Length: 210
Image 1 (cartoon, rainbow, N blue to C red):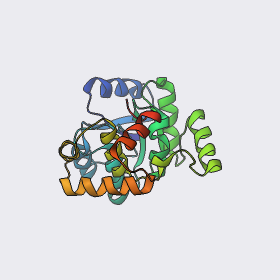
Image 2: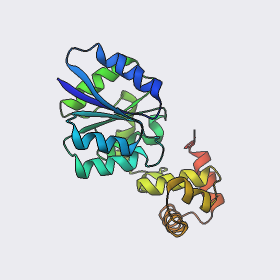
Image 3: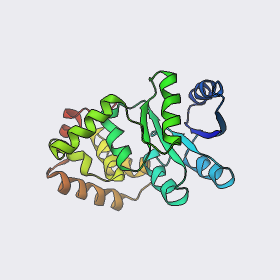
Image 4: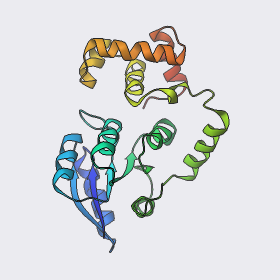
């Protein structure tokens, strides 16, 4: 029996996932959570084989949670299921040691196949994502400067792209202003861009926002 926990801050989405999974004789939803803190509390007291995890969570993001899970619960397989397109997060998620990435608008049967695959110790990628990985390896990241950023740097980049001030970014990501400034400096250096306006242009040009 594959034991599954679902982390998503939307109740109706969790209920939809549970309904699809409950029809499978070899799967059981053993827990659910609305944020990173609840997820860690659950895993501290319960066994879980696969965590179906949304990236966009209140407070600590799914990307940050992946890092915590890798350190504390390395046996738990992580399947990211997000409304964000694969082009934005798929490759980054796989580089963060998650076992797979699937879009929320995917057919329910594809979700079931993805869960079975990652539970079996394999990685799940859609055909589109597999092609992107091959392209990434072949082009050595040409034209994708944001892929060289850390997960936190990437979040700061997106916030800058949305036009948020340093103070607003610090509040949104629960960081100090000095820490956000440090991340901003690293982003500018890694991407060889001189100004916030340049970062905003890059984010818009590469369609990184919702």
